[in-house]
Each structure stands twice: as C-alpha cells, then as structure tokens.
Image 1 (spheres, rainbow, N blue to C red):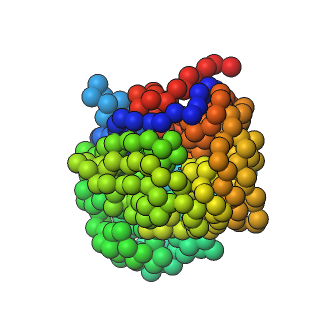
Image 2 (image 1 turned 60 degrees about the horizontal axis):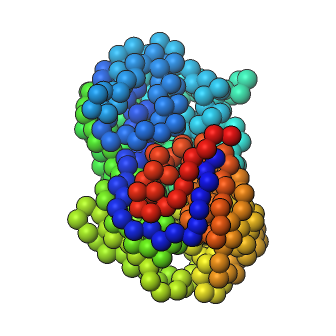
Image 3 (image 1 turned 90 degrees about the vertical axis):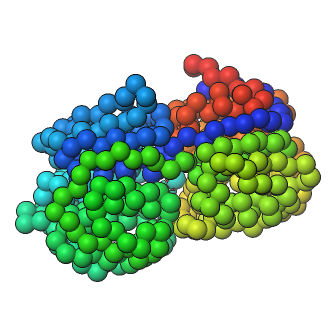
Length: 420
Ligand code: EPU
C-alpha cells in the first residue's frame, strides 16, 4: 500500500517512460517475425513481465539486455496457446491471437474474463479475423482459431457500439500483414499506440498505409524481418503527471512527452485554468488560480482518453463549481467514484455520467484501488488531500506506472510504499 501525506505542492521534473499500451501489441508483433525483435524504451512494469511470460509459453525467448532493451526471439513457436492463467490477469493477452494465426495457421487463446472497468467483449477481434478467412469457435473458454490455408485480405468494417477498438485493430492489422492480397480496415482505431504498432510492422517489412487514420490499407507480404524499434512515450502517464501538477497547484516539467498525442487533454487542462507550455522534449505544467469546472466526454482518439477520466475526476472534484464527466468508451468505469467520495469529494453517478460538485478540500482517508487508472486517481487525490491517505492494492498501479512513488517524491510528494 501507499501512505501519502498531503497536501503537497509538486515542483520539479519527471521523465515519462515508454508506452505500456504501445509496447504490449508490439511485443505480440514479434511473433510474426520468426527471429529477434529488439525493443527500446519498454517500461519496467508487471504487465510487460506477464506478457513476456505469455510469449515464452508459446516458445519464444524473452530477455532484457544490460542496456535495458527487451529482446524477443520468436524463431521457435511450438505451442500457439494463450493460457487462461495468464490472459485472465491481463486482457492485452488477446492480441497474440492475430499474430499466432498468421504465423502458425492456428491459435488457441483464452477468452478474457471480466474486468474491473466493465464488460470488455472481443467479438470485433473475432469478426475481423473471420473476415480474413479464419475459422473460429469457442471451446472450454478458449477461442480456437484455424487458418490452415493461410489468411486472405479483405475489406473489413471494424467499428462497434462504442466506436473503434484499439486491440481489435491491432489484432486484425497484425494478421493482415502476412495475409494474401490487400486488406482494408475501415473504422480502425487511430490511437497513437496503433500507429506505433503500424510503424514497427512497416519497419519489419509490412506494407501499411493510412497510419493514424480510420482507414488502414495493408498489402500482405510473404514474411517480416527482425528489427530494432523504439516505442513511443506513454501519453497516459504524461497526462497523469500533468494532472498531478494541476491538482497540487504546483509546477512540473514533464520530459519525454509528445504533446501532439495529448491535444484533447491539453485543451481541457487549459480550459480548467491550468497552464501548459511546450518545452524542449515535453512541457511545463502549472496552476496558480482556481480550478474552473468543465464537461468532459471520453472518446476514441483524438478525443479525450478514457484512460485519463479517473485522474481528471480528482482534479474536477476540487473545481470551483459543478462539472460533468461522461464515459463513452467504458460506461461502467467508475470504481473510483465511491473511493473519492470517501475523501470528501461530492460525486454522483448517473448512468454513464458523473456529476461533480466541486469541494474546497479533499480529506485523507483509507481507500482501495480497483484498477490501474482508478489507483492513479486516488494517488493524485492523496497528494491534494489534508492528512494521511492510505491506498491499498497498489499492485494495480505497478501494472502501468514504473515506481510512480519515487518519481513523484523527487518532485516533492511524500509517498511511502509499505508492505501489508
Ligand atoms: N469493444 C467491443 N468489442 C470488441 C472490442 C471492444 O464491443 O471486440 C468495445 C469495448 O467494450 C469498449 C470499446 O469497444 O467499449 C473500446 O475498447 P477497445 O477495444 O478499444 O479497448 P482495448 O483495446 O481492450 C485498450 C487499452 C485500454 C484503453 C482502451 C481504450 C491496451 C492494452 N488497453 O483496450 O487501456 O482503455 O484501449 O482506449 O492497450 C489501461 O491502460 O488502463 C487500459 C484499460
């Protein structure tokens, strides 16, 4: 657990690590190569370690170099089976399905189970892979997919009830790189992590155009080759640090941060009275005036990201008036609401929305983390709240933020990690 003394005013510099959500599908892309992939800038997180384990069970060799690069050797894949024990821990495990099918002609991957942020079906992944010619059925909780004669390119619409799908696009795009002929993915996810994956695949020899747009065109090739690739910085981590500066009325210089990936976030921050200035390799974020209330609706990129919804709720909890947050990607992603209320926030959930009546102060309390971004929101609340906040189950935060307490402490936070 974390014991957090507040309130503090953060001041200093924090460096953003490589993107978790870019690294995971790029690690899966290593399956396609049949050789060594060397990835630079992969963060040191429990989710990355678990994904490495998943690749090792397939037959890959996964190792860290002395310089911190992650090497995936996929020369041998003799067990195209994604086990329930691993996939249940980490839903991103589903994105080995497309690459395994393309490489081995068959795959068996556990159907991911429930998740703290709500229902997370994979029907669109399956639909897309079926369109490429895979035969897929469900057996004993596993997705069993076969493409004995290889995959064949096609025009595929990949939209769903909540818009595009990030890992669904990743899965189908990876499978299509080795399919016969041309695949067009309409309503593809435009998230920077999908573009990073596409850029890595192109470096491996794939032929993908339309990167960053909702229409990806993929000309199938016979094989992909080993590469060295640097993953992009984590925009969600950067956004979390931005809110940390804002909620503590502090000033942070955030390095290794691409503002172009955070346009909706920067726009909202400025709208609530936070100063964000571009600086060399990142930005400087500060706040001196009151927090102005705002309305936020989460959307697929380039809209406001669902992965920063909880953190912004902490900020708006202290706004000078009423705000509304509407969650359009995961309508049940509100586990942090009740915990923030335990810290004297005034939040009321109404269906997929939360009405926030700003309060003058948050008060420390013992709280419980339920998922990765909810735990980030509680830590931010602990920095601003009066007294000692304890956040239990911080293993959730270790999935997505590398030693967050050390990095925040170097900018003036007072967070102690304790074993319970
Ligand atoms: N959806 C379907 N059917 C599908 C796939 C998705 O209905 O087959 C729905 C989802 O239920 C959701 C919406 O489509 O309502 C979008 O979900 P998406 O598939 O884009 O989510 P994901 O790919 O499973 C990734 C990130 C999440 C992030 C979302 C949205 C990774 C490893 N995960 O998940 O990150 O919230 O995109 O941007 O990249 C996190 O890092 O904390 C996290 C949860």
